[in-house]
Length: 225
Image (cartoon, rainbow, N blue to C red; front, side, top):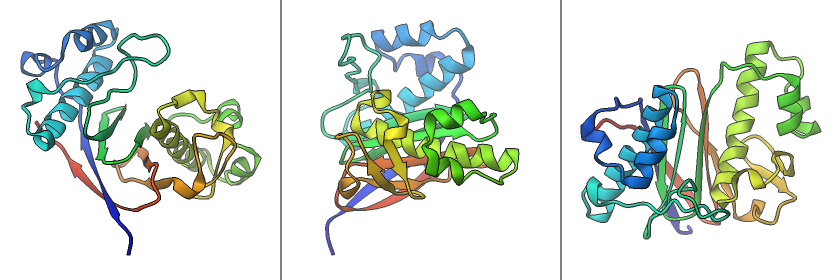
């Protein structure tokens, strides 16, 4: 039996914009928090950062206040890129009232989406290739949306794991269920990519991807401050 990588996933509801949580944000994060126009978007961002700093602080032997992320964008140098910290791999995602955090030891991507949004033909044709689109034929509108957003979260998780995000075209990824069947982008190799659907709760779809050739075990836990 080969080496096994552990991946822990936490799910949380949006925290309030209270001072006890806001003080955990550093100056660039405070700026990003203020830039959100809607309060719920501020709270989602805040929750992701507070949960990550709390969980990772415990793993690294630091207080949440001591945890500092490097979120420098590789393209423009501004602090809105994927957050990073030495010694651990993690990914944050949020949608609706669900905020998720995945923590492991290899490059990881997490994505969660509400499944009750409309999935129109233009969005489906943008994200899915012809074979994947055919899998949605014959489904009711609700089933079609749910199935589409499962595809979407899988692809988003894969793209996030590479650190390249939307620079990887969605249609360059071909899925066979929760498995990367093929990729025309060099950043993703089916032989060194692990993918799994998650259970974020009713009304949501989620997936986690890890760039590894090893076996992976996952745990999902509800997080409370």
